[in-house]
Amino acid sequence: MSEKDILSHELVSEHKILTKNESQKILSQLNVKPDRLPKMRDTDPVVEIIGAKVGDIVEITRDSPTAGKTKYYRVVIPE
Image (cartoon, rainbow, N blue to C red; front, side, top):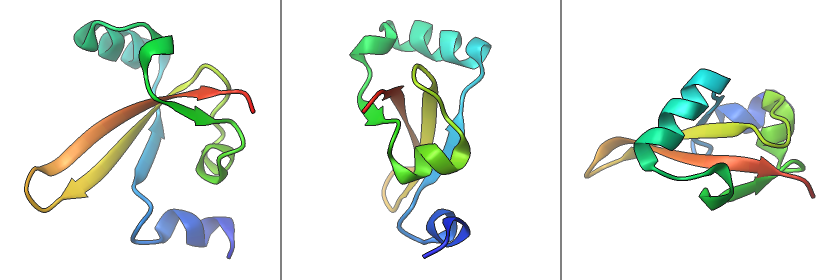
């Protein structure tokens, strides 16, 4: 399966690397430090494809039949 296929697969949610400003805003809204967010490894295939680096915060947008679109946040950590 190619990289393009992975991101377009129906079971893979939309992933976006947040800018520093966006990251600070989200951390402030959630009242957490980055180390308190759920983690995703820098070897995760989607992390590699989107070019996220260790320390980046990734916003994952999932479709939910009951809640509509929901956003989740993960911090990238080293393998």
